[in-house]
Amino acid sequence: MADTEQVDAKSERQVKRLAHQIGTFAKAHGGAEGNVAYLGERGARIALVGEDGEWGNLVAPSVEIGRRAVEKAGVALQDDFDGEFAAKIRTSAYEWKRMAGIQL
Image (cartoon, rainbow, N blue to C red; front, side):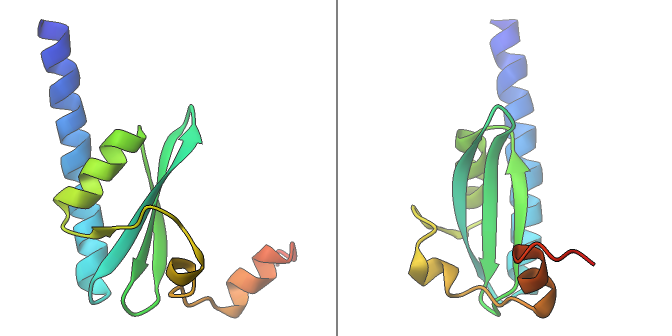
């Protein structure tokens, strides 16, 4: 029982920390939407897209913790990182160079 309580307390701290970071991002960018995707043993990627087109990523220890953090932050959670969601991202020349494999 004590181990379960420790795990629950730890996951709640993780959710709270991530939700704070997500909320800060959303506030700085006029709101945001998020998507949580499984990364494997590493956990889950939380992709955030601000209303102004800025974007960022966070890593959560699990999909469940990532989803809970996005919801706790009050950010709309998108089920898929589809074309409509991805089209909201504003990229710069830096990202295009990195995507092309040209790293300066």
